[in-house]
Image 1 (cartoon, helix red, strand yellow):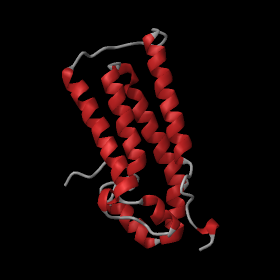
Image 2: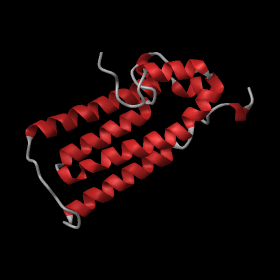
Image 3: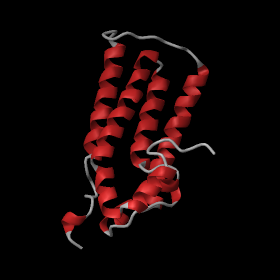
Image 4: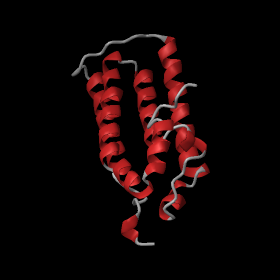
Amino acid sequence: MDENNHLPVLGIGPYLIGLIVVITVLAFVLSVHNIIPVYKSNQFILLALGFVLIVTGTIFWLSANVSSSIDNHIKANQLVTTGVYSKVRHPIYAAFLYAITGSILIFDNVFLLVLPVIYWYILTVVIKNTEEKWLIGLYGDYYILYSRKVNRFIPRVK
């Protein structure tokens, strides 16, 4: 198969996730040094939710990379719609979004909760205009139907 006719195994994702991690760490450092506002909630429920999100993110990442063998499917031009990919279309991005949000909750600066919303928006716009355009071009109606059934990052509650 032509190398230019499928997604790269490592596309724009690592750059986006790297940027998100750097911004989050910078926000933590700025919070510790009181350069940006710090609003503590001191709520145990947020701490517990933070751990749940980190664990969920880890499970999504492992399921997408190990259980689904996504690298092999990309190389073979096969769209994966089973396993964790039947829950969310982009579980690797979702995994990092959950883990970062969980970390922010554990860090306990409510002011920083704006970051996951910004990250979600950026990831949505970039993925929609890069990977999903390519996937629609390659898989056509099959991908469009799949995308109507399965959300990008957050599983549908039935």
